[in-house]
Image (cartoon, rainbow, N blue to C red; front, side, top):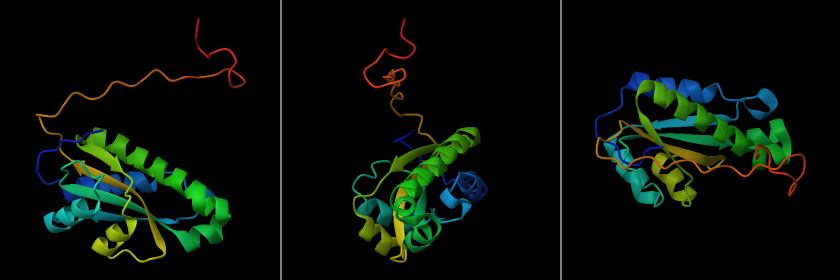
Length: 167
């Protein structure tokens, strides 16, 4: 994950490859309920950052992952619409992160607390939920070192039992 980008525009071909990677992620019911918005116009990026306080990164582009809620309800039911579609969006975002690394660009994930403002800013129809906003750009040379992963707590067979993998 990257939070400090240089302002070199990301090529449309690379953004298209990121969308392709997102589209290869699983979707509940094996039916497409996700749609994407690629944002690379500086005016829209300023607007998106302005209505998304948690969007701390200065990325020059973004990929917005949305779920068509009525379609998700029809295809997967209430649980699919409310829970599984969010998991599916996360899988799509992870595919984007993996593809971005291969393409030499960085990404930053955001879940907007101001979804209605994002919808207005990008003309997203009301039937969609904004699941994840992914900032995309070339990593700045002056960025802080990445955080090191924490060692996971893993239980074996039941919660509170022997720690899995511990000696």
